[in-house]
Image (spheres, rainbow, N blue to C red):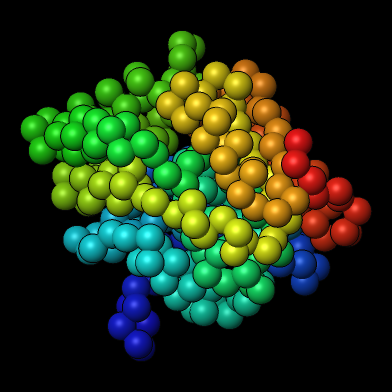
Length: 269
């Protein structure tokens, strides 16, 4: 807790010798925690300083709190203030992508570059209601270990990638209340109107086997942010940073480097 009463998210810092460049914040998916980024951290760390937080109610961060888009933005702002960081690059997957878009829209002058993967900014009302009823209902009726098992089975194809175990453990460790609150805030999000406020060069990534967030949802993000482009992560499903961390890290690294040098052509693709 900060002196002003704001929470400070649990996080890890990785000093890769960024040389004063904007640190890169890696933002995890619903139910996961910062450990889901382990394989990507190994690949991105050389030459970059990384910050890997746990969202509120997830991992080692405080729970039992109201969950909202505004709260997510406030949490990241408080963390960066605690770390004395002003400008950042953001990389978010699924829920983390929603959070990254919201922060970039609220603080356009503070985001050097933005990578949004396997995410969305708004779902059709019937789709959102179904997802909320299913997943929040599981948390209300099943042990969290079983909720975690079901999530992994629904998200990853066989053979299940090694990183999936970090997601399983993180969901199993959540309280039912924190999980259900995150589910409702995530799938109830309606922030399409914020896209034009994002000023950062933006790369949208989509796993080519992602049936949970169809490509059209990524195209909406691309089309709503001036100059954004879309790239496909091959051999990857909904959490492409886990399914194919090598390709994910390569695409993200190339884009982050372009943003530093200013050599990239940020256009729709």
